[in-house]
Image 1 (spheres, rainbow, N blue to C red):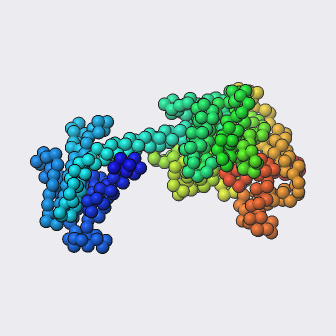
Image 2: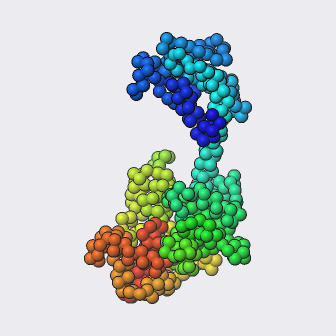
Length: 505
């Protein structure tokens, strides 16, 4: 019994007792409800020692009523062919049974066995009461621990969602009850591990940096862990960074890490870490830090900011007709999540795919955009990133708008000299890559086909696996993720569009 209690718990003990009784064994509540059960009544499934099969539930319920009514410590009832035995379990001191402030009787061990009752069975059942009680108590504690772990995991996921949508003050409030405190500034790290090993890898990550990072199980990708790490220079001073430690400690683990960013720009850090992860998969070291690359939101200037505000105004001022419908903030978060995760946004937002589709349709109608077109997706993505990025110190809101005023459309934003320089920086790796002509044709065709591999393969006259292989090579060239969201396709579309405008001006 001790071995079964350690290895299998209540279920194994009941199965063993049912076998010893050649019948049925279970744990029932004080009202006769069966809580756990195992075994069959003789006569079932070809066990023809007794042809009559009793109604176990009725027998047990009758026995429970009799034991409760008589106030007995044990109960035995014969039906002629079967015997019902009942024994109250020992009451765990840490889990008193109470209902409406009043104590209720402890659950009972119930056994239905054929007559004659095997010699010593009653003694065996009495000896089994303590192991069963301890198993039930341990299992109850384990269920509570899992609920606490789930609640903490959901809490951390909620904090990450708030950070990704720029709701910094609320994120700090929710994170106040958890540990560690949210750092600022940060590096965002994405760790990809084997399916089913995420909890163990999370423990390794916590030990690798002394528990200083905010570790979240990614709600979108089941194999990813997201670490929001303090970027205070401590890691660089020690000579070995957390991403290197994790990659060295966990076999076949892949790690991507962002640049140093303010906590308010966690979403930018996540995109950078995800792009670095795409590159790390192809390298023997299995960890990569995102290379320095300017954010387009930082180079659009004040005119570009006013363009973004004008584009988003119908969305940000939207008031739903019904209180239960999503408001402006929730719709903006939905758009941000969908642009980052595509169809996986349902996992991120915890909504049904029909709900996501309805919200996207409303967003498109409010903004006058066709969200099936990559051009409109890129415009919305840029506008939302501009809104989420604090204005540079050199262009505070108090500074007058330049004489040219706000840009009226995206093309005017992309013609700005700073944006043109950014576009050249984005496309420079493509121009330096071997076979740049074919690589450029593949990229332009893929983007012209709205980022869909099938139509792009047909347009290029190659197979779908061939097109996928070319795009995978482009991921290495750009050191950015293209095929899996968050994808760099919006930045590349903007860069190519800026290059076209420069050529025609």
